[in-house]
Image (cartoon, rainbow, N blue to C red; front, side, top):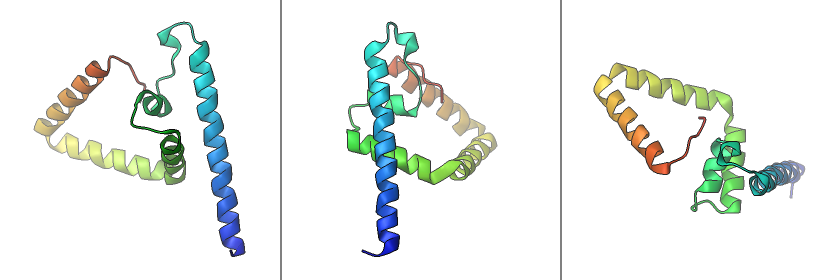
Length: 111
């Protein structure tokens, strides 16, 4: 192991521990809420609500979002919105599809 590899392993370990702590804090919060309106509606909650995400998967995805950064996200969103603005037919289709998805989930997320 080189010093760089050891440093990277330590950084990944810190990320994993931090994300794991956030997930545990969220689960504690969920166990103590009195009404569904108190449930946070964010990406972490989407992963918790979805049966397809294991704890390791949630940690890996969260780290990916943290590392990917806002620049990549903003470019992707800008490009998507630009393409949808150019094509009104697909924009309406996408809006209907998203609306159906959220209606089926019977939940409200602040995205």
